[in-house]
View 1 (cartoon, rainbow, N blue to C red):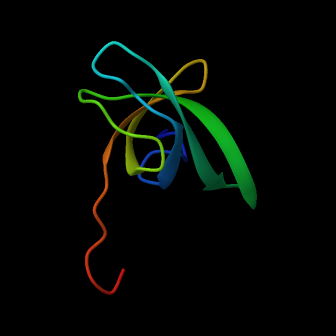
View 2: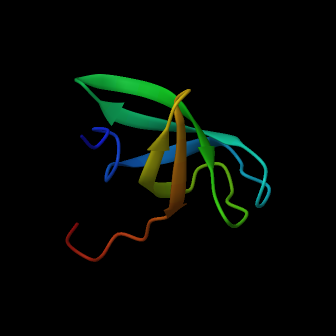
Length: 72
């Protein structure tokens, strides 16, 4: 079963300074918002909208930058 957070978007509340470093992402889920530990292959600034591409034990998620298309 896939974790329900995979495929959702969120906003980084703390930056990810590069591969191997961690940040935090705020995700709207289950009728509220929750913080997850985020990691990415590249540096991402706080405030960046991201897409969750994988979830791991311990509330750790892999994210990539998300660029909304016009009309989204």
